Length: 349
Image (tube, rainbow, N blue to C red; front, side):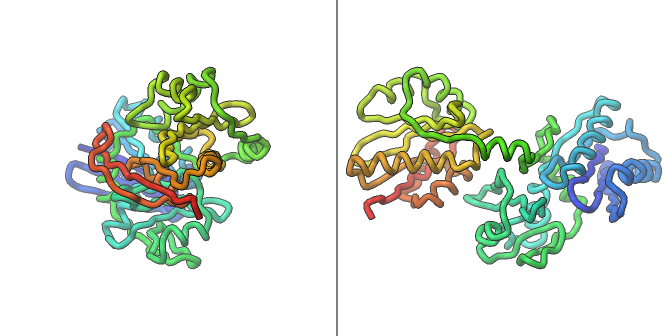
């Protein structure tokens, strides 16, 4: 198997060439932009091995996060190679790559970070045995808290952090490409444009009780956001009209972008909660939880409870930050075989 893969998402331009069981590489620390240095470097590496692009069986490219311009250049180049040769091409997440490099060199590294723009970071951390990639930019202070005093794996030295700088290892690049199933080559950009940020700042968020007319919108968000144990439209409809349940929707400029289904017993169970992926990180899920908490207090209920898959790290972190604690673990609870974390919050204090 002959493979060619590139990483243009970082300051250094990396080109890795695998020929059967041998690996060759080139790292370019150049003042030129990657789009100027990349093609000559690839051409030189191939010519030195008496190869052309037609001799390559598979291509790989780091799709981000990282340099906005670098990512676009790398993906465009590999797409052109793929289309010209009719061969397969795979996308590699830069945070997965960084974590693999860091973990192979220091197995005590649990957090990795890539410097973004505006003094922010792209971050991944091993949580519940899963390498969780935060889907938004992390500030310096947030990163320090996430790392919990331990070293942070990075591609380059950051004097403001307790950083561990990974060393280049072309074998890890090949391993990450072999693990990849992503052939879409969609770039990973976490930061919103200025126009998008302004649009979101101007938006109005409101939480209101759901009506039967909202069922299809709620179901659409649930289908996109929750992987297993789905509610049916009848489940949602019955919850809206049943006095033992309460259903609220979150509206952004009058568009339904989130919901929660609450079940009233001696506790208030958050049976289902989700926010459309386009509107996450705006505090909407927290507003829904605030509504649930206030709803419980109004009915003299002291305990909020919910269930979350061990693999749903984003939700788990949100609930933990909100004050929920683990009550018990239910093994192999969900349809996909994942464990269930049953969590509670005492709101009597």
